[in-house]
Image 1: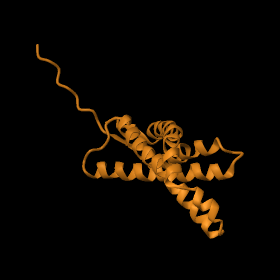
Image 2: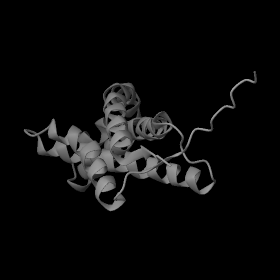
Image 3: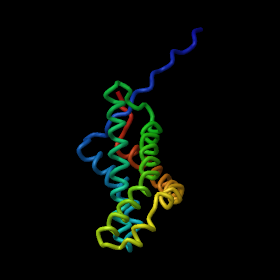
Image 4: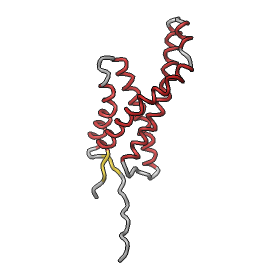
Amino acid sequence: MRAPIPQIIAPLTWRRPAFIWTPLALAIAIGWPAALFTEEPSLQRLALVAGMAVFAIALVTLGASWALGKAPRARRVVVVHVLVAGALIAVISPFVLTQLLAALANYEENTAAAASLSIDMALAMAPLALIIGLPMALVSALLFAWLALTRDAG
């Protein structure tokens, strides 16, 4: 008796109709962290912008891998794309935020406030941004992968 022939795992496909499921999955994946900050509109906007940036990067890398003929065969591949993008945004965000605040303080001619916002402050905030950002990216990635993608039955 011969050993069974291994089956090739079919790649994931977009859930049909994609024009409904993909935006819905993105809205849920990006929107749930913003829903945590209903009392703080500025933090809510920050969570939305960060989520949009994470998914923009993740969808570009996923699209590039799809274009190269390496469609994801498991949802964990999609989750890894989102987590890497989330880690990148989480590490970069303190630097962008401190530079924006310093520019705003310079615009308002508040030199003392502008001088207090330094690269050292951004370096100190980077681990905290990772600790907060990565769990949110993980949950968002799982939601997106399960809602937007499916295994082709054929």
